[in-house]
Length: 510
Image (cartoon, rainbow, N blue to C red; front, side, top):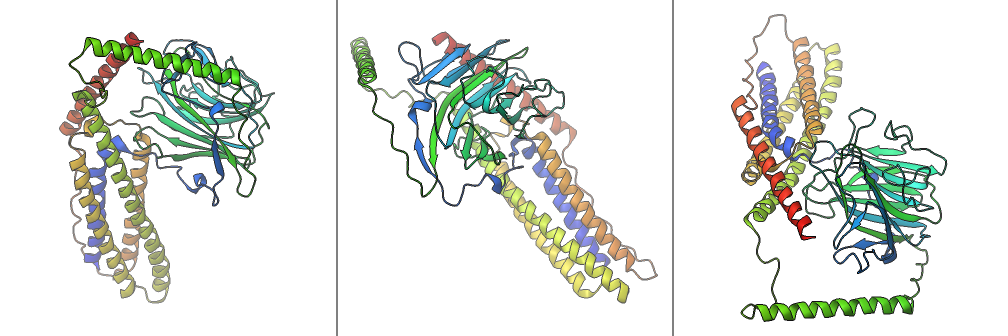
């Protein structure tokens, strides 16, 4: 019996060693897996979706010749360009917003917003907001839009005003036109729902999917760590929400003492129709005056393009007529692409490892409950644990060793994949990863303690010497840790310099 207890302790020690192996990678590439639940699942019968172009924008060629965005109005410090709208630049005390010109009357709707929030500082400000309100909030002090709105605002708040260290955060606040936004507390007392997500300085654009369907508001987030556009995670949901029958869609942003660039790449709106209901008829045709205007602009653009082509062919007669712009990539672009692809593969692999660890913990909890119940009943009758219980413990530990071996094999593949990209990660999920492994160690400690108590209570009067526990391996030496931190810091600085050069070149171009 003592040998079997020692076997259990050895298995626990091996699992802890696997945790030590996983910890550096999880600190870099841990997915935000908390909160992803069935709450964000789609209904059994999906609604009919229809794209509404009058309430959407997307590049390229986003801006017309007169500097306006079709069907949208921009105010404040918003700067439209060919492929995005910069709601606010990274300067202090800036405000900007864009709003639909036409009021919508959708009973159910969905908007998909693609944006970037980037800044040089570790902390940004103030944030960005997505709106559906009965009136256009063209200017104001709530993330660049008007206060006392009638509708709903989804706030991407990046500055911690209340000092609770819970930012960046996504908050939903509804208003009937009488509520004054509580800036000092980041709207915590007024929030209908919230979730913590870091949306600043991500390698890929962040995507938010806001769905209002059957009086339920749901927010899904793509955190910008992978190029997969459909890799959404559940963020929050508000049931029994009442919104105005008609409203304007908008997006706004503001900066304060600190500043970020708030760039919106696309805003796509879809009208949702419940199954069994008649699909609304399409909008009437474009008026002849607007159609002639757009046709004239198109012909003018086509003439300019043909003229530029002719001039280029005259200046470069030895070059091909059709040139591919993106056939070649620079060394830096190729390295960054390889790094991000490696991060994506590691991200998926670690998700699989997390699922296996969850299975192990569930099995351990079940067997601990069974052993505790059976052990207490058996001790009351016979004074010792039955052989069947010990056989069940042994079989459980053999299964545990099998799971651990599978995890070790998987980690070998992960380490090979991360050979060229492990220095380019970020510590965005530091708190979640550390808390997750603390929970794992705590559960293992409880399992070990329960088994030892059962064995000690059923030992005969003579003391038996248990086998020595195997030495626990050390997680990471101090030298390797500092080398790892130094390399990661150098790579981060290099990436920031490269990004600054790209932004300077882009600004110089425009």
